[in-house]
Amino acid sequence: MERGLILVLPLFLGFLQQGRGGPLEVEPRERVVVVAVGGSMQLTCRLDCAGPRAASVQWRGLDTSLGAVQSGAGSSVLSVRNASLSTAGTRVCVGSCGNLTFQQTVKLLVFAFPDQLTVSPVALVAGLDQKVACTAHNVTPADPDALSFSLLLGDRELEGVQALGRDEKEEPQEGEDMLFRVTESWLLPPLGTPAPSALHCQATMRLPGLQLSHRQPIPVLHLTSREPPVMTSLEATLDQGSTHSPPSPGKPGNSSTGPCLPEIHRSPVPGGLELLCEAACGPGVAVRWTQAPGDLEAYERREAGAQAWLSVLWAACNPEGWFQCRLDPGGQMASLYVIPEICFPLTSEALWTGSLVLGLLFLVFLTYRLWKCCWARQLLGSSAPPGPN
Image (cartoon, rainbow, N blue to C red; front, side, top):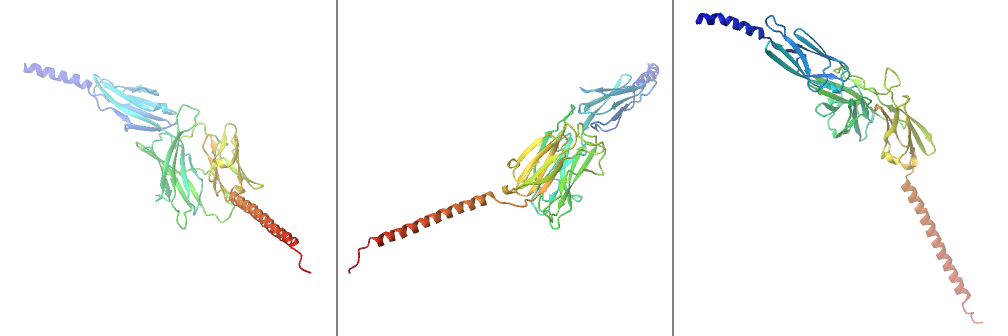
């Protein structure tokens, strides 16, 4: 009996050996893999089986399109090209050695983080209380855990800033991907003396195994004249730690080397100033005024496609500050700082007119009283009895 067991045991172990295999290997090894919109990547799955039988390896998807799969003996390669948001999802690699089955899952995360930062205003003025907003265009995911903003003075965060809130809106797109425009706003503290030459808005995208940052400079103007320069949107400066980000679909441009930017022109008119915002970007674009000192609705505006006009009347005594217009689609902005040259407050003019009218009425009343007094004396003099002879 024992001799029979000795003969059967090696045969049984041989059958087990045919079903054994090494661990299922997936490259990259991370369980969450990120790829940019429009980007490409490969997922490779391998399995080695002990014995003469070859391993069977295959990629499978869960409610998502798999992409291009090439499978061979002991390996399977999943290629993702021109990734879109619909590419995201879970991929499953299944391998088998004989009657043994192995499985590993990989979550594919697709993101968009192009170098498209804009700030409002595009420049700050030293010595003034100011609000500043930083906007990242055509991004996803947009939640605060993935996308964050900060204001930098040098390489450190600016201290004493007051967060005013965060706004997320969908960007108009021609394709199916849903991208967002995310804006963070702050109230700035006094910039100190001497004021810095510039601040920086930094947007950071943090995903599993990936961290990207873009920066946009915000110059600080030290005004010494009453003719401040026109400041158009500055090109964002890519942080050295950033990697390639794909261009935004549908982004307008007037050349193959840079984006289309709006411009603001100022023309003096009787009693004020006329501002013209225009963008020579070809058809399909429009500009509109988005910011003005005080209340934007208090100004006379006219918009026609790629041109938008705004009238500034000195008699209205509008406060000094930034005028800003925006290009759609694309979100590029242009700004102009205006200091009123002459100001005739309407309240002072009304007060002066009212005082003049009251003065004239008082003068008429006084003249009437004097005339009445003199006329009464003349009547009394003419009716007096004659004196004795």
